[in-house]
Length: 222
Image (cartoon, rainbow, N blue to C red; front, top):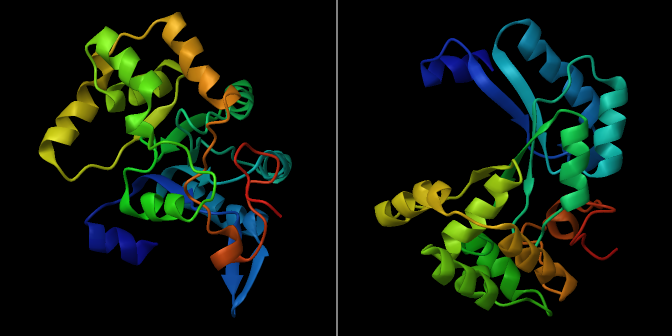
């Protein structure tokens, strides 16, 4: 970590995240998040990092980590968008005073997620082509991407949309201007009730070869 700071030209990191609760040692994958977290806590005590967080944990793993942690995760980065809403999971984080950060907030717009979507048998309409988001956007003078981002912001979720195009970057940034209503929230919430559920980031069976996201919406089949 000290070498990384030197390469970055920094004295400390604002945030260090554990990307997955699964590690790989000598070619063998295992759930090693407790031991990894103990070492991450040292980043805070040594003032190498101000905060530490987690990513891609499920409910049981979060609770297990909290029982053993001396420093609570500041943030949990997970996949959530209108096709993968994780409403109960996000509410549990709020109760535990853990911030939630969303990756893939625009669904399958990233090339990797689009490829994974094509591999799914029952894939929904591409998120930004969804008729509900388009209708809401038309009524609010917003794009479907802005509707998706604004919806997460209304839930208190920080978003991390990836965009190489400057116009898309500007569009994403200005999503805070998209004034959604409670009625809009209800329409978006209904997407999952209508069967539009999709987890785009799923490398559990193909790469990690251990179950991930157990008990969460869009969990891979066993």
